[in-house]
Image (cartoon, rainbow, N blue to C red):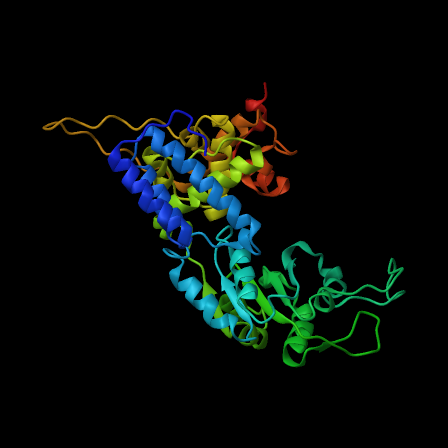
Length: 387
């Protein structure tokens, strides 16, 4: 490392020596320790820590599977990771349950990486994004001439995932007819392409995920009970971010480093005030939303700092009352108000652009159509933020 006029006192040097020893071992908890230590050291030390954290992140990304590390695995996700390691040794179907943005795909990849199939393909299919009339062709493939537009034989997702893992995201969106065919594949590993006569056999491990209550869907006839029993052999529930606040420092540091790399900016770590703001936010979009907020904070800070307050659209905290004084409790905002304020803050930073590489939808990591629908519901007008 270059000197860069960093001045450390003896106490800080001893702490950094201990930190360096930890980093050599690459313990899973070092990233959390980096963030916590950075909150208590001087500016020079924090700059050194930022470099050290960036080098650790770069080293992880050069290793196989480095991008798939689960941040928080030693804290709020301890039970989740224990379940992943346990079920990874088998070929049993896995059902990951959690709200949108909680990291279901990351956990699905972890199941794959902990299995004997780690060297095989891992393929993700978003069941909710495929039109009902095409779902059979997408999952099981089709023969040439089997329907209008089928100009060539095409393998489906199950064939392409042979020897590996197929991740069916939002499985609760599958039409009932497709659920019947999926059940057969899970029972004996066989199926036919659309328009085909030959029975094909595959060796595929199924990992599914949903943000819906499938037991309720079974009760109203929207999901087959026999398929539910088949895929729910080993359910893994994911806690929402609001229930794992202890992970926010490590997640924020992780996303700060990732944003710096993506944007070509110097890495900047969140300070104590930033972490307090992040912990107070309800995170309806969970980890995915946190990643967007941190990237936006990095853009707004332009490499000098993380502008977390501006990224969240936060207002200054009122001054505390002095001893003997009383002050009325601040009104609690409802969730829709918080979300509306957050969307408006993003639109302001994007000058009212919704779509495109620098648009609000890209920063929020949502489909532009979804964002426009939410804006209409909340009464948000993007035109107010255009220059």
